[in-house]
Length: 237
Image (tube, rainbow, N blue to C red; front, side, top):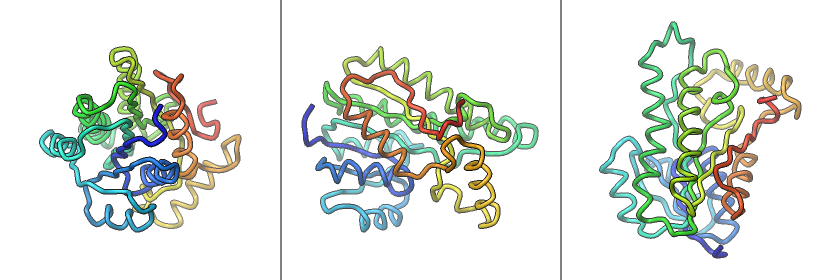
């Protein structure tokens, strides 16, 4: 595997994606982050090593995704951390539309990026999807997210065989303390994080760097494909 590789982190402007971009950049790779918000991309670049670049993309648009890969050209590694807008709440309250919304913003967004990237990825390339523990362990209020995560599991497993020797893997985080929960009140967020930490074998919730480390390890290990790596503090037990 090349020491210096071209890496695209879709969803790399914050949280897990930003931490992942930093890990690859600090290892000396050529890294591009992509996201919908130009302001977030610009802010993220200020925190990343010199040489990291940013590209705008709307992962819900075929045209926008095609334009992104047209600008980037050849790639080695594609890391998919997009999934904003996932609906959370009880099924009887949210209804079927919540599942459709979450499938589009998480499963279909990642699938669209992966499909368009195929003609640009090298033979020794990798695709790493980001799912979550809700795909394996039923959680109240997380039905829509769980359905999307299960879809990503199926997609990653199928593509690992279909696209070989391209390597395809899935990272499944548990609860991670990221800006994804910024919309909650401070009290509610603190209570949620503490309750989860108290219930986990490791005694804490995840940090973005925990998930980034797992993504980096899987991409670097040429003997891993078709794997679902749970990085959840033991939540799946």
